[in-house]
Each structure stands twice: as structure tokens, then as C-alpha cells.
Image 1 (spheres, rainbow, N blue to C red):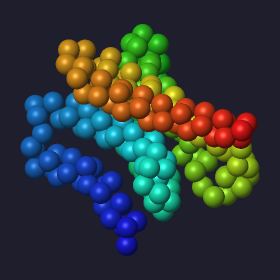
Image 2: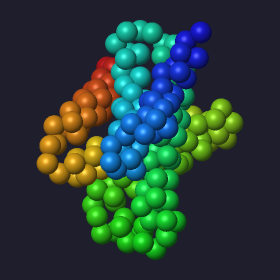
Image 3: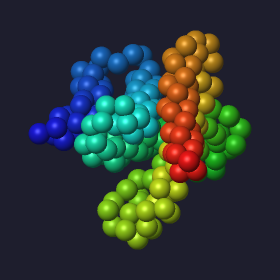
Length: 194
């Protein structure tokens, strides 16, 4: 019952974006609206994916872990739409021009890095890949989400230029979520030693 609700919640931002686009209710620059909306929802889903383990530790609701993979895949899906708009509408599938942009503009470098790091996470999110890689290798690979989150925040921060309030909020949340993980790992190590 919960999983369909998670699907609906995750698809709602995209459905609303399509609805407003079809009704011509976006701004004078609809491409920018679509790019910004898909970008911010990518970051939100990344943050939500990172938040699931700490929420599980705090609440003791172990079932939360069942939704981490699904939300992570939605982060990748929104990120793919975000990147496709950038590649198709901004650069008309001109790989050389896109690559020049990636090298020249730091906010695009950070965003491109975040997207590229999500690809192996999405590809290896199946049960088959978890078995193939084994628990330790899979867990190590999926720590790329930490770098992805930091690159996503940097991308947002460098993109907005003037009002950096929202990117700073996301940065603080990501820092807190990573800090909880560091504290948890340290506590476990101390317990093992004692």
C-alpha cells in the first residue's frame, strides 16, 4: 500500500510540470522552468535518499530502507530529464559544445559530475548487481551518493549566483546527513574496540 503512494508522490512534480506546460502556464522561458524544476527535484530526491538511513536509525522503522532504492532511482530519472534538456535543448545534441561548457563553467562541471556519478548507482541498483558485486563492493560503490549530493549542492549554489539562501539550506542538510553517518561509523568503531 505504501509503495504505490511513494510512486505517486515521486511522479507528482513531473505530472504538475507537464500539466503547466500543456496549459501554457509556465513563464516566458519554459525551457528554463523545466530545467530548474527537474534539477531541484533531482537534488530533493538525492537528499531524501540520503535521509532514509538516519531516519531509520532515529525512528527504528526498518521498513524505510525498502524505499531508498526507489527514491534513488527517481533522483536519477529526474536528473536524466534535467541533463537531456541541457544536452538537447541547450546544445542541440552537439557533444563538443556541451563538453566545452562542462570544462568552462564550474556550475555545469559540478552538475555533470553529479549526473555521471548517478549512472553507476542506477545501473547497479538491482538485486542481481548486489549479488554480483557482493555486499562490501556494492556498499563502497554506493558511497558515490555522498559525492553526488555535494556536487549537486555546488551545482545549485554556483548556478543561482545572487540569492544563495536555498542552496545553503540544502548544503546544511547534506552536511548534517553526512555528519550523522560519520558519527555513526565512529560510534560503531568505538564499540568494536571496547
